[in-house]
Length: 409
Image 1 (cartoon, rainbow, N blue to C red):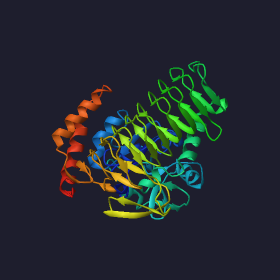
Image 2: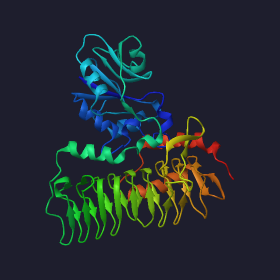
Image 3: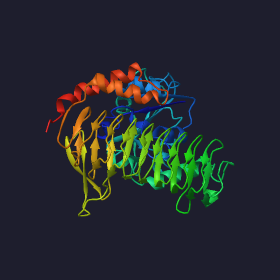
Image 4: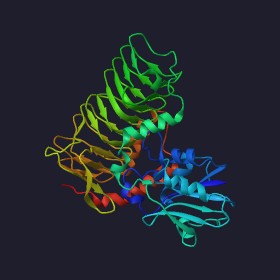
């Protein structure tokens, strides 16, 4: 069987985080949406069906996957579905192996499609039109930015418990470190927990990945996931958060996801927020995650073109890939910053900053593409990476679209 992860027409609501990657490559806990689907539906082969603009970067991200499903039985799974146990998962599994195409639908959205012999290059949405349909409820589909951080603690805990490796603590914990609830803690053999650090798994499990470092006197309160090579700086306080591959965090981080390869290495508060890749927050940067009147937070939606009600009381910063801010930057509640923004200056930036913006509260200019790429090359070289031709092409097209949307103030 082939498992094919596909995108549908609603992924635009997940900009700017989905501008630079397929929706299923978004991290929504200790795992990505793709990771959860692959665990739920073991397959001999994996394929993907994405927007044309992210096809090449998705192929680079997953070199063993195919951009077109091979002939033969295929299960198409919506890349926005956060696969969990429940009626929807049971319904999808029940379709596998049937002789006729079968679609699983929730509120007019295709959740999954089983097809015994799909035509080459066929769209899953088109194939579903002639399939036997079953309606389900309870499938959690990531529809808006705030859905990426909803129930984050529960998601992290579920992912870590499912790993089956909790309770494994390698001998890399220095004297003076305190581990509470050791049976719910995992420390990889090549990780390091420095003297005086506190890991408390009373409220949820903690996972410290290979080559990750927890600095002296840092405090981690689970559920917490530190990916490979992640670094928690000395004295930092981290709770209910995900720090992805080769990211660095300091200060206080609560209820947040740092996707991978990003830095918030200094003091300052990051709450109920999501950072993409290659982001950097200057020293003393703070995010507000609660309005002064304790009211509902509105958040910019790329499809609506305006701020929309989130139904959430807590929401901080959503920052696209390659964006940076200077020291002591202040972000208002529910701020959305696009891809490749460079923010600086006093006072709060606007609550929506279009991609490829250069400036701050005093006004913006377009961030010149060639200069942005030079900065990216310098940043990425520090982790032995470079911009690929596919990334350059995608980012260049994003710049062309957004340069005309920047308000000079």
